[in-house]
Structure formats: C-alpha cells, structure tokens
Image (tube, rainbow, N blue to C red; front, top):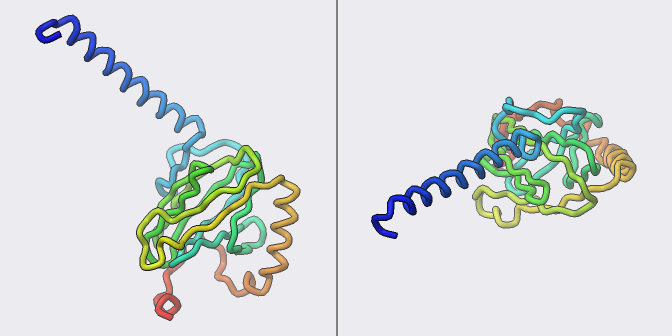
Amino acid sequence: MRGDARVQTTWIVVTSLMVLSIAIYGTVELINGHGVGSGSGSSPLTTPSGQKLKVQVIAQQWQFTYRFPEYGGVETPHLVLPVDKQIEFNVTSLDVIHSFWAYQLGVKADANPYVNNIAFAKPTKLQSFEIRCSELCGLWHGAMFDYGKVVTPSAFNFWIREQQVKFAAATKVLPPYSTTYLPEPKRRGG
C-alpha cells in the first residue's frame, strides 16, 4: 500500500466523505428540532414551532426548583412534564455556575447567574428521567440530582393544580417571574 497513489487517494476521499456526511447529518438533525435551543443563550438560532410549555429551571446550591409562569408562577421542587408537548426550558442560577442535565430528554444547558439559557425538549413517552448537575458546583455537587416524570396531559393538569394549592403561600412571596434573578449573598451565606 505504501507508494500506491490510488489506494492513498481512495482512503483520503472515502474517510473525508464519511466525516463530512456525519457532520451534515448532525447539523440537519439539530436544525430539524431534535436539539434546537441547546442551552446556547436567550436567543437560540432556531426554535421548534407550535405552542410550548415554559418551565424555568432555577439552580442553586444544591438543588433545582422549577417554576411554571403559565400557572401563576408556582415553583415546585420536582419536575413533572406532559407527554407529547413541546417544553421550553429557561435555565438560570441563583448562586454559582451549574448545569441542568436531563439526558433521557436530550437536554443539557448551563445554569449561570444573570443568564437565561433556553433549551427545548418534547417528551414522547411516559417515563421517569434523571436530572443532574453536570458542572462542579461545590461541596455537595454529587448530591445535586432529582428524578422527573413524564405523565399524561390529564395527570399533568391534576398535578399542577395540586402544586398551585400546596405552594400558594410561597408563590405569594416569590419575586415576580423573571428570566433571571439576582443572587442573594445573605441567603446563601446562611
């Protein structure tokens, strides 16, 4: 094979075409809605069409909370999502840099103070999924995980009404919904 220009040329052309075709395929898949809004800031290049359920993911040492602005701004400690509904995650942080990672949903977005990272997902099956922080965020980083659920639309409506009643007192004192919040050093310091 050494010195055989035909074999060397064929090798270079075939491997180049394979790499380029994989790159093109990956780009097309991202643009077609499988990875749009990949946590790349507050103005993603592409967004999926249709109506979306907004869920704000608020990271803080060492937990995530989830706020639903379309349901009166109720904030819950667990994430429940309806199946076959486009979800718009608005990811931010109250203290240090975190990363919201729900790998079964195909979502990973950095959670930074003063920043709103938008990511999209459309759960297509009823399931439980893991939520983890994938950014070293402090002493208890390893314990910063939770489990979410994808449920039927009727089960989601029942759950969200239940959360609105359960957290009504807390919702009244929360700051108004905003895509980012100012960190509060006194609260973090204990």
